[in-house]
Length: 567
Ligand code: C2O
Image 1 (cartoon, rainbow, N blue to C red):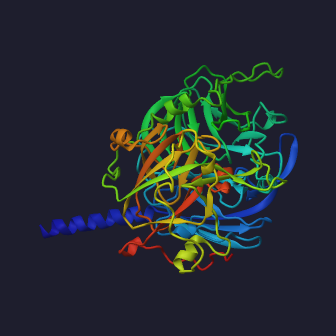
Image 2: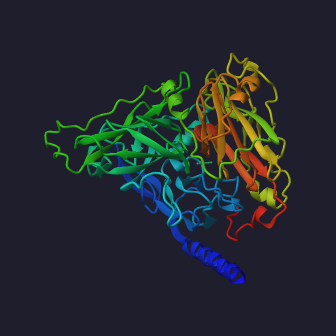
Image 3: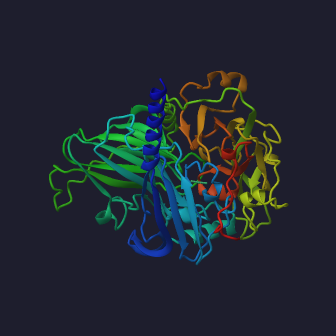
């Protein structure tokens, strides 16, 4: 008996050391720099990482550690955010400027250190400083631990598909102009797939992204919507897509022709090359829901090319097959798609049922009245704004929220973010003009460590209803319900999915509707929640949680790294 126990203990220790030995530390250097890039017939200087556009793909395994030294060789302040990484106890490495750190100034550097804990799938990284993420982004792929299989047949090939948005002008000047005028920013000039607009744009054909495939093979497409301001539909001509994962969480596989994906979200799909050998377009274009708002109505393409396909003729007559895409305002298709998402049952699925914090946040636009003039070019002499619970979020400038919290610096923020809207109204109805102007503020909402949180995210009809992709830093959450109109607790609560709700870090709040999320506040720190449409974020569609430390050692924010940039 003794020997048996001894043997068992040794065996366990061996397994433990094996799994630990398998974890790797990846060291990378990211040089943020100005790089000339030619698109749409013109060469423009853009900000890149290491001169690459899109930036470098990081590939790691669950359990690995990352050490990324970011050197700012560009002329703007910058930070990098690892979108979807939980950053347990390491909020200092999260990246949003003035939230968890001051920006890295030109000539300075900062090293992000974090560990992947129980996450696998597709995530991405991007600048989280002004609108630099328009060109500063890349894929972050987390493979399962060594020896752990995917919950689906092994694909033959894996391809990151980064959907982006391209401006023919310097993005910082686009942002500056919007900030100055108070009007909506210029819409983009192209969408891109892996940095290339594709055949439907001027001067783009030669550089169109191409992916070759053998007949019968299965591809895993890791689709990332890195667009600045636009939700997108994505499809591949003649091929069915099997959705297997979102935001680094597996889902119950389902087949679809079209994927709707909001900025910030990722979607893993399997595609089997089961069509006649040939060339097929994959394509993406806008899902745009705001009323009377301009948007980029172009279509980006890449080519899926069977390696046995007949060579394209030089006369250019054999164009690849172009798929049909939903209309830009096809909310039925978007809803039919998102309502199919279910998480894959796993031992880790624990949807909170006893709720400690019942929160209700309105999300939407607003208008600020101002003196007619060049700075007042929004609708009817106003400036655009946006808010959650009528608070238009303002970032501090002298320090970050996390530093202010950690070092007890007074006067940087308050913790009175309202748990419910200050005034109840018919959110998606005809909202009286008196409710259109939000209040500016740097208000956080405090959460006790370990509390079970539910948030109803309610779109409003202020200015216009709109589908908003809401992202929560430091967490993933269960999406227990979605619907249209005003959330009605007595009717809608009963229909929550508490069995296999999708797990995400970014979820769309349907146009004129609501989404309910739940999570356990088990990661202390200051965590931004915001609309991942950057123009809305800039207008104030954000708030922050302050999650207090727990009693245990592994339940407290770690000390800040010594090279944390000063403001
Ligand atoms: Cu992907 Cu706050 O960002």
